[in-house]
Length: 603
Image (cartoon, rainbow, N blue to C red; front, side, top):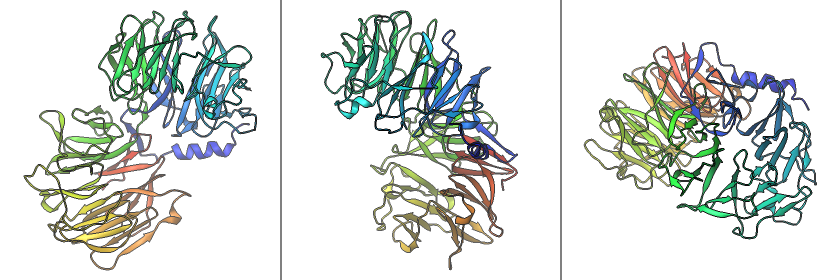
């Protein structure tokens, strides 16, 4: 069934920012898998957590139809491109991604449709033959480039449910049958009529992540598992030996070159070379989160990474260069601008731009691969609050981040950082309460006041009155005038943003809730209900304030409010997680499209 025209209108609207907005990067993002040219290894397509990208002339470009929808797989089946969308089945294009059709015929015997695709493999000797592994409905086969499908589940009836989750498929080649791996029911081989479990010597309940074989050597197979390490077969899967278990036994991806050299990604250990002698750990990319490995003709490898896009590795497994130009699929959680340039934090570290956001470079030295979700400047020093790893401070002389988490303990997920009046005290809103770091101190301490337990805390500090704080958590708002020694409840509030700024000679506290903005100058609160301004299901996520203007981020874009007229949209696109106004512009940290700069909307 062809996608209705309304779907195209919705996607175009979501991707069509106002004329003065432009995406600035940084490049990268989470890539689920890659399609490469079988002759020279050039990338063709990338399925990401934030849409589909096509590669040409050294540059990735986003395919507009998909916007920033999360995708699970992409495959090239002859002239057809197949895309598996998360929770939305399989789609097909025959004009290089200009138009798409939803693929029908993918359903179990009981009629349950396939919603999630776990594996999608094209036969290298017959590109019109495609194998699809579903979540719960078993494997399927197409002989016409993905246009029509038939169930390939004979022999699976009566087996545990895991047998119908085809996490890995390897098309047959000569004497080697088609192989299927499952997440707990082991390995199966297709004999032309039905699946048969093979072989008996493998561990019971084997969870298989990936299968790989080199071109021209059908008897050689490698198998990546979760919990039992890396396995190899020299007879097409009849018998197996374990090549390496590793510390955790988890292998995320594996590939084998034509010369027999293999590369495997071990969780927590990085890349391991195998196949030409004893396995050798390269020591590279221990925390990269490699999703897919592709062997390149003539040597080398491409890797699809969690958070960091696509990278090329040399024949020995050493990283050579990012292949990320144009791959703006990152989710940016924090943005900060200062005299040195613009910084942003994403789900895997930090980036810096010295040219107003046009180009970016990673600044991750000293960071333990943590998501940076808060950036704030205190007395000219940049601090980063992370998810689960505490607080860090940038040292410009060393070019690295210093760990400033002493005393945080298990309260190491930072939701806000706020500097008190004069910048002498730094306050942190965490999942374990509000903590403070006094001037000249090296260890954090909890504020002595008795705030109740809550899963997350936001904190704002007065810029004019030393010791005055506001904290939001557990559905309530509190104020302290003595550095947190005592707290006064101000009422119920489901705050998602909290900031205090000077306002017309006084100080105003702005409180953002999912569908409402309100404020107080110390007296009775005032506010505006914005529910009617939002799209169905849209909610606010963050705010920033400068002088007499407030910017609001939502799951559908960004808004500007001057305190008098109605809020007006400044950008409608993907979700916005952070906002940084600068003279003449505003930087938006978005979900899946990196940093977006909107000119003409700054203070």
